[in-house]
Length: 297
Image 1 (cartoon, helix red, strand yellow):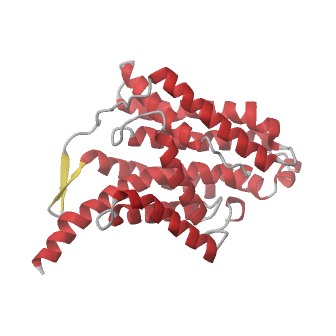
Image 2 (cartoon, one colour):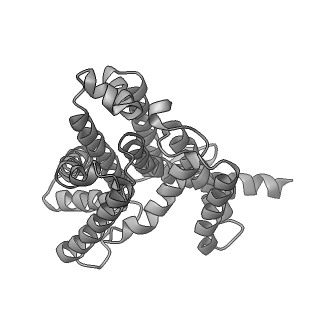
Image 3 (tube, one colour):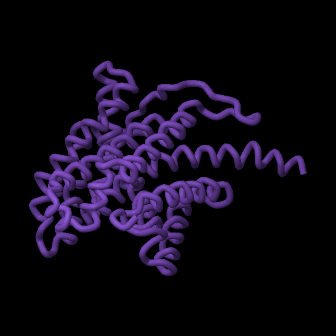
């Protein structure tokens, strides 16, 4: 009996806390993906590279002498500008084509490849390490958890709640949802749909960059860091429902817990296949995912 209690307390509980801290960042990244798809019907294949750029921007700002907290504030703003320029300068040029789904997918894939190479040229291929801005650990029910991971969970949770309130409880969110539901009707009512699209894309990119900043002190920063992470984010979006904010939150927290706990019993190399297996099962059982699109939420 004592061995079971010790295992639950000292093995399972810390693993769940670690999974929750990563899950919050995954949800932030998946929220950016699902908001972009829910409004624009664009599958942003460059989302992982935007996540990586967010981490590199934080490293660069720290190199200029700014603190982590300034980097946490400035990086999403800089990423939003980059996202707005990408949408207006590139995506809008093919958005109204009859083959826009294929063209935007290929376009964002190409953008991702270019951005990854730019990161390699600018920062090199070697991993960089960012020091944790919050040191020490806090005792919770007899266990010690790193303070920075607790901060990521708390801060990330507030951000997720803020995104939900923005989309579903503000006039701006009503405009976004109306444009997602029927852009032609919204335009006839005077909604600047093109600006709403660009602003929403910028907001999704900013969330990806913010996730990069939050995870930079936990993981190493390297040019291809977004490649594997975005696969998890896409799994979250597909399982939760393409364009569903509620689905992205629930699926993100669930999948990262599955990944974290399963590593106690199976080799970590099987964690990604396990997630993809869950995704395949969900698609077979419910192809539209767990919930509906943003415009229909």
